[in-house]
Image 1 (cartoon, rainbow, N blue to C red):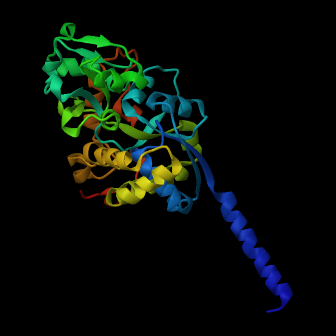
Image 2: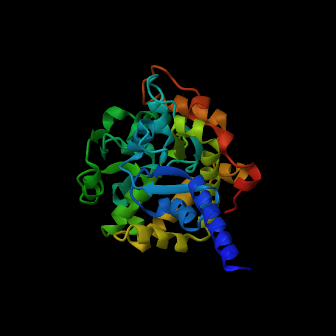
Image 3: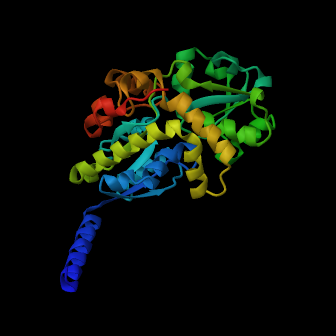
Length: 338
């Protein structure tokens, strides 16, 4: 081959490579919180090249909370997010809000919990009567308080609810200034353990085990972005669910990716946090039977009704307003074993 032909071939290959790069769809994705154990699947899909293989150029940013993740997508600042589907239900109650939908559920059960020290003797919901409950006003778990009270016949007049800030929630519990707190199970548990509270000194009461049949954090998408880029949305969901399956079997390796992204994170605690998320929230009986990502629309309808026990609807959304299954891979590709 002559030098001229070689140069021509190299130029052609370079042009093809450039074309592939140009064809990639950029996706700005925001988490609901910091880079911690449960964010591992997104980092896994990014580092393993699964997003790139779907023609995507994905950037992942940390978040402030699940509600803010929804607002970021609604404003168009971000194309997709990992946010609480229950907060999305309340968001969609306002007709003027963007018609955002969830396209894949990651937490089949939410990590909403009542956490207490074992010495307080709060083993069942009614044990909260006569106690002080520390709850940040913006907390996703506390948002379900009235529904939890109704489901468990708690006399709410006998529970003193104290509005506490997120940074002081676990310290106040550890110091005995409140008897119990609301929060994400794995976050409050790890925060207490890292403060020196023994494993058997902590009681975690999952709301999902006590009458609240809610879904949890999901992948949500901006409607305009989804309409213009349906293939990109489907590719993102496919790559992420593939990573969720692989991280389940490779949690130690996945946690190292988290610590690499967030150097102040402790690998030991993030490994525990990730395992809790998989055991309690991601791989449930429903997921083992039906696969990752999807929902039972009857269950979702029931969950919207339960949210209505804590939230006054003015334009109550339907299940089909909240979840769009059209971007999910085939069921066979979403199956997972424990």
